[in-house]
Image (tube, rainbow over all chains, first blue to last red; front, side, top):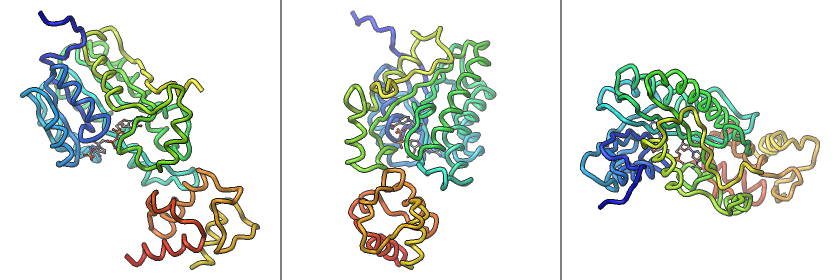
Length: 247
Length: 76
Ligand SMILES: NC(=O)c1ccc[n+]([C@@H]2O[C@H](COP(=O)([O-])OP(=O)(O)OC[C@H]3O[C@@H](n4cnc5c(N)ncnc54)[C@H](OP(=O)(O)O)[C@@H]3O)[C@@H](O)[C@H]2O)c1
């Protein structure tokens, strides 16, 4: 007899963007362990291959794609099968104080963190790749409303992503498609390697639960949102941050 | 180069009117903090098209060493 587990993703096909590194990578691996067929995507072939080698099961697929242009997004969607779920984990960060923000940096951040998930979701919907009762998950950030040094552009991109999530959730509820976001606090990945070890140690002290998060701890939330347990949940912003925003 | 850098440095850390010398340990200025550091790195990127990587930046102590590091990167 198998154990009761309402969170299984057996026979679901799940697309994970940003799967070549960090949080997206952990999400792809956990989804495969929960029985899903996972389609992983990223720009870097070697890193994507590495994630692919860690996936369980036989029905997985890896596709290189660059979301920095609309054409890149559109041609990617053409290659996809029908999906039961999507996790948007591709994202970038750039810290610049107000005096140094500029149009180019803003465009880059907004393109990857906001326009790409918006246009990818639109294309998936228009091309009818999202089957009934499918689940869309955006990996946002507590930075949407929690300030830190020089993080203006990233904060703005994630704040807008939260609003996008609610807007799409409302519109797609007619189709039984649910749309939710996960808002992590600091999780150690390539994205966070831009600060020094000393700064990391000082920052960790501010976390009520005493440490940064692990990529898997975000992945489990994505599994929850993709599973059939959350059929009545949409437009939610789920914070997972070791308590830092309690301060 | 050094003169221009010091003037940009003062502007970035909002230290106009203060005495800044090449041998100064800039981390000891009361104006120095993580925002100042981020601003300085951004200024160097913008003005000199040089990105000083975090670890290397931690090893730099004086203004003169900063100028040296920029010049070294420039000749690469
Ligand atoms: N780490 C944290 O502390 C933290 C906290 C809160 C929220 N988040 C969010 O979590 C998500 C994942 O972050 P992470 O920490 O896992 O970062 P990461 O390790 O740097 O991974 C970022 C991923 O995004 C992909 N990507 C970036 N630009 C892309 C583009 N133009 N087209 C296609 N793929 C692109 C990268 O692919 P390639 O490397 O193959 O190019 C990589 O797989 C991001 O949305 C981030 O904002 C992270």
